[in-house]
Length: 130
Image 1 (spheres, rainbow, N blue to C red):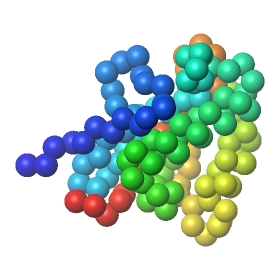
Image 2: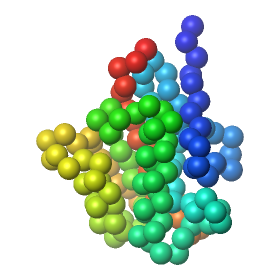
Image 3: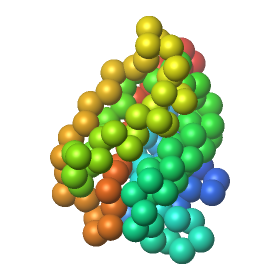
């Protein structure tokens, strides 16, 4: 019987709880919450653009550790402390998905996030492995 494979990405600040950055089973990869924590300080930067930049940098590292290509991802969920910050993700979104005919589903939700955190990212991917 195949077991779930836990994925830990190097250089991504780890959760305080005992959870991996992502997990894979039968070629399906689901991430845990990915946030814009500064790995050198362990804090969320007060500058919102910097925090979103870090969140997407961590996202790319988690995807890399999971061997997930941008086109493997079928859905992103963005959790915002304030949904007015939604436009801050668009530049990064367009870098990952410049072709408007080859983008995964995307959903934004308001959430009660940790103090100082403005964004959490989750993804679901189908790799075709397994």
